[in-house]
Amino acid sequence: MEISRENYQFQKIVAVVGVSLFVIKFIAWYMTNSVAILTDALESTINVTAAFVGLYSLHLSAQPRDANHPYGHGKVEFVSAAIEGTLITLAGILIIYEAVYNLWHPNEIGSLDYGIILVGVAGAVNWAVGHFAVRKGQKNSSLALIASGKHLKSDTYSTIGIIVGLFLILFTGLVWIDSVVALLFGAIIIFTGYKILRGSIAGIMDEADEDLLKRMVATIEGARRENWIDLHNLRIIKYGNTLHVDCHLTVPWYMSVADAHEEVDAMESLIGSNFGESIEMFVHTDPCAPFSCEICTKNDCDVRENPFVRKLNWTEIDIADDSKHNL
Image (cartoon, rainbow, N blue to C red; front, side, top):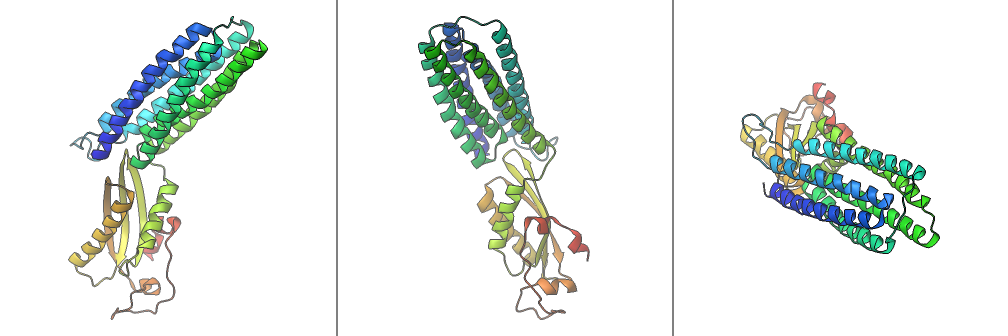
């Protein structure tokens, strides 16, 4: 719960910054009448909306589980990211529309020097907050914070391009550059929205996180105990910053329930210490079978029926498979 509160408090900062920069960018647009700055201001409108959607989702995901939500409320973060990705994409489409319109109906541009300063300050603040939001989100496994951070950073990159375009207009007097810059970064914004939307749908559909699975398998393999004869059918589901892990662990058949439980506790402790405080593990213990002897490294087994052949090095593909359990 401490991590959830951390995420929620940081998202408050994102929301406050979003509102502040929204005001600054619209002042810059009012001063310059630049469609490129308007694109930046329009995206800030989305920033503000998305920030408060993310804030609500983090508030909801921090709520304890209840009878209606036995796995907690963490999946609302995926919904929040989906909304944000959709809003970003719509902002990009609107930006392209405004840019194309301005190519045929150009506006007179003025006060570019003040506009550049205001947009530059807003961009720097955006990048700093976005950078820390992504880092915090990755550390705490919060898709909502990561989405907010990536949104702010993408806003910064578009701001940099817009500033370059404004300088070109300032020194060349070519007003059409304003629309070309807006078109280019409108396309970039649409692509960013697509990536966030794609990630949120993957989470809603419980798509496997291959990088997370690889890291977890490497951790378990590196601290493997001799009574962990085999590991299979391992699956990971994300609910906000909580990981739900379930697997089958093969242990010596003659172990007592208490001894087998001790092995499970050791694995849970290992994963919990390496992947954060919000871990739920469901481990099913299987008794070893005669065919298990070939991969069992236990030296003091008095009931071994077959000789040891080779050590099976676990991989993310191997431990996700359940077919060997049915041999």
